[in-house]
Image 1 (cartoon, rainbow, N blue to C red):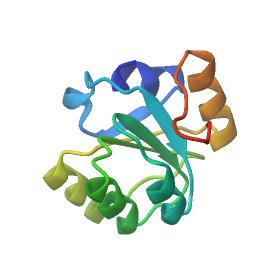
Image 2: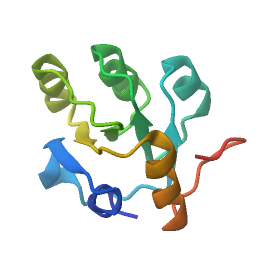
Image 3: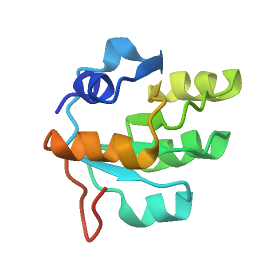
Length: 118
């Protein structure tokens, strides 16, 4: 699934990187604890989170996550957008809860990886 398709499925909007959103993703991870993300993440993954701080962008950069979607209507700060831009990490958001957003992506065929599912 392409990132642009995933964002559309969850009624999302882009904060940065819409022009890069034709990247392919094969799994998703939903977490607010970055330690959980570090234990989970596989290749070509999309991260759903309600955590809105620069640590999210730094974690995504470290783990080569190309897209972060903020749930529950959360909006990243200007600092976060600038960090994401410098690392070419796509930022988007949705008003849906993590549960609903994950369910919509799962229903469309996107799966979790490893021992966890979204």
